[in-house]
Amino acid sequence: MTESLEARVDRLESIEAIKKLKHVYMMHCDLGYPPDKLGPLFVDEGVWTSAAFGHHDGRKAIEDFFGGVSAQIVFAAHLAMNFVIDVDGDTASGKWRILMPCTMMESGQKVSRWILGDYIEEYVRRDGQWLFAKIDFMVNFDVPSTESWAGLESVRSA
Image: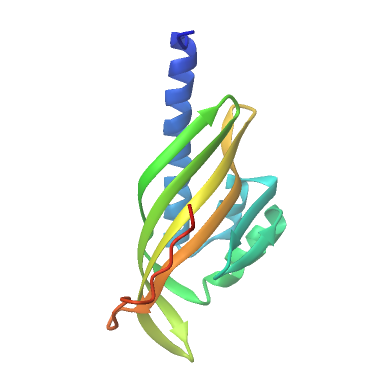
């Protein structure tokens, strides 16, 4: 059966809303990781997880994480790309790539770094608004800008 025009429009509008959600998330990360701006982008039972940055269960834990990470990452430019978003009614999934030039504090010194990573995400629509249900971030490499990442790369298994 052919998808109705209404369903197609809803799916396309949902994809655009999820893209905006992701870009707002990235913008706030680039502006110092303010917990009061990032927390409301997640459902209360949301999850943010990463082998490199820890597992944070629930909006409060996510806000606490973002409240502390700005002391470690003092500058960031989140460059999101290569998205694939699949919508199924009021739930959706997404995959993104990120290239992030950043400045990190290491032993009291600022170090310029390159981080390449990928996100696997889940979203839910609540009261007409798309929110993050889960962000799973994997670091593919994280190196000082003066060093090569050759041989340090990691990727998710299929």
